[in-house]
Image 1 (cartoon, helix red, strand yellow):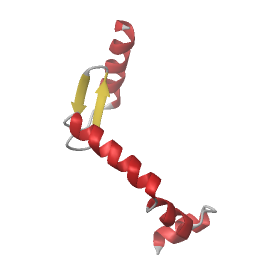
Image 2 (tube, rainbow, N blue to C red):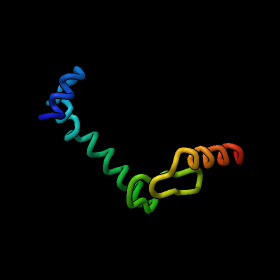
Image 3 (tube, rainbow, N blue to C red):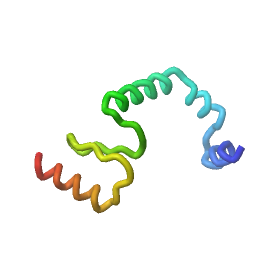
Length: 75
C-alpha cells in the first residue's frame, strides 16, 4: 500500500508497473542476468567488475575511483 501511494504521488500507475514487472520481457531479462551472474561466479551483491578484476562486497568510493583510474591508465 505504501509503495502504491508513493508511485501514485510520483505520477506513476502502480497497476501498470506491477503488470510490467510480471511481463515476459522482464522475466527474460532477469533470466539472462541470472545466467550471466552464474557464469561469472557472482554469488551476491554488491559485486563490481573492473576490467578483469572482480570485487565482491562493499567498496569505499575512494578505492573504487582508484581502481577505475588504474584501469583507464592501462588502456
